[in-house]
Length: 451
Image 1: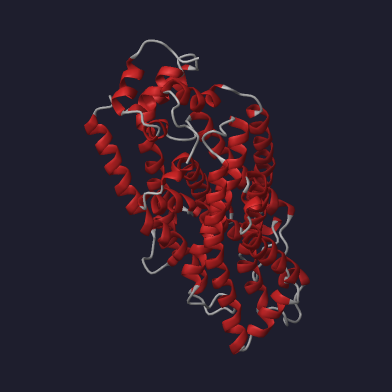
Image 2: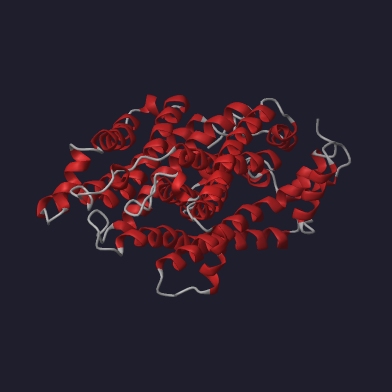
């Protein structure tokens, strides 16, 4: 689905490796991320020294911005499974230029999902107890297990397609620092480009693509069970598993569109990530958002119809009360409006698609906040003789700083991966362009370098 047809291999290799050598704007961007990380690190050291009292978390609202962020990070990470596995196993070819972007996002955000849990702990040195004294009946232990498994499989699914690219990088990056060349040499794993090696890589990729599907479904289903396996109003639901998974597809797909746009612009690879890719991703977003809209309607219409004791206060707080402004902005701006606009082709162009996707990602973040916080505040709406700060919640500056630090670290991971390795698999792009594996081997065996 790209405009690479009839391009010589040297042109493809040059186009996809050139951004790895150029540093225009890269240093400024990294310094900005490091500044955000530095601010969050100061806040976290303060939190470690003083305790969780520097946050707005109290005995009643004990899960706040940190846990909301954890759910958001896990959700966004699921896009690796959606793009690389589900669409890849269906044989959809247009995902080739963007599959690696999805895997980078999956790795960065899944890794930071685990970090967020540590940030939420008042005594992080006790993390080891989760493994030493794990209880098989604890959903928290299940969550730790599937998050770790998903990170490991995502890393493997990212590294495997990189192996055939290593000869191209070793050939074209000879003028780069020695440490880079060493990384490329180590990750080549003795690759010579034989038919048997290509066969092993493809078979291994397929096995991992199949294996990651149940793990990815488990990671967000188990996350939903942390909430749904309690009798609290707002969480006591049997649909939370599929509800969380479809919401994850929405957040992740929108994040891919945003990253696609900025990579295409900064790397100048419009011939590879084309308008067609934005068009297809927007259509995919419409599909997953429609399913997610169904679950959103179901989440409120069922308890709203029955109106069990306590449901009325929770629903009214969302629809017309304390959380109504955030609720309607999330539902309309992050779900209903994008669905309508994406039905029209002009809004599936790169710039409109990127703008709408940013709105979807932001709304997805605050949707997790709405899932977490109102329920914890609900039972205290009529609490007497308690300080206001115990029955209300809004994140403190420390919480926002630490959360933004986690986001910046996840983005930094994606940035570094995109700077070290080609943003799309050179060998797959070349093969789809009609270039045989034998031609690739011959090209890499030549002594001349690419300028």
